Length: 202
Image 1 (spheres, one colour):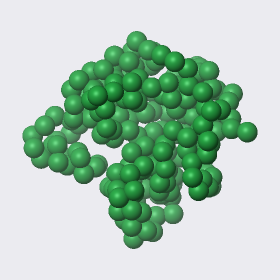
Image 2 (cartoon, rainbow, N blue to C red; image 1 turned 120 degrees about the horizontal axis):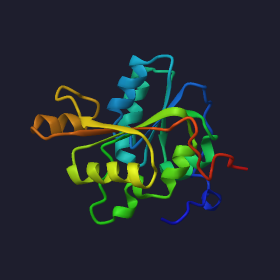
Image 3 (cartoon, rainbow, N blue to C red; image 1 turned 60 degrees about the vertical axis):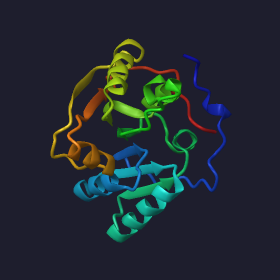
């Protein structure tokens, strides 16, 4: 796997660095914001930054967030990779969500745990923080478990999502069809090191 080079990434268009709290979580691929709004509503003392790249989905998300008036939810319309590089300091996040990401069937290198960026994302997590990944695709899930073990060498829990869960529109649809959804919870150990632990944007 090639090494990630954060210094090569420009700031996203119209980038504004948000005000950050010390109890901050990140969601990448927030879609229309169902999980983001639920999380922020149910955890008023936690800040959630939720990023969505697709304009149509983000506009729906932004409307939902505005109607809810949740001060602890920050919707972001951007490509997540350069945004994270320019916005978040090392060992900062209390957790991150990757819920039903694009499985990239034609380009396995673009799946999150196969990307060099994943190491950078790990560097932004506090010790003992978790990354939660969910998918309905068995092969994607099995590959993610394998990468967690063999490449990233991280402890994890892997299990099926409760049939009554309703975190995202995708999850609701898949479970209603009788599909199995899977969840992978990856923990960053206290002594885990990356090549980006001391790297911060200048």
